[in-house]
Length: 124
Image (cartoon, rainbow, N blue to C red; front, side, top):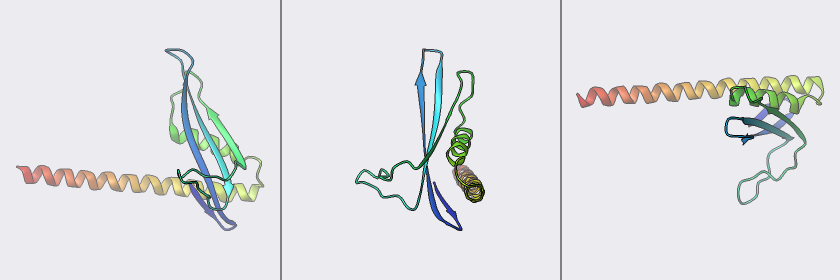
């Protein structure tokens, strides 16, 4: 996720994993690692810049795994050591990007429904 602030570009990388402790106990973890500036990528497309700031959120066994919640918690922990003004700018960019992503997803869903309804009407 590319975050644009007045001070420049930051990149937040997220990963989600699930670990099974037993058949009925599955724990989910969301990790966030961040750096300033654009990514430098290898031939596989993986970022080569080392983790500068990182945070992790782990569900308890009884928690419902929700990616968005995990991202917010991990992001919060990753930026917790940065100066307050930098944190404010990063959170502003993070939340604006998250709402923009939701808006795009909603628009794509509406368009898919319109196409589906048009096909159904045409098939009659």
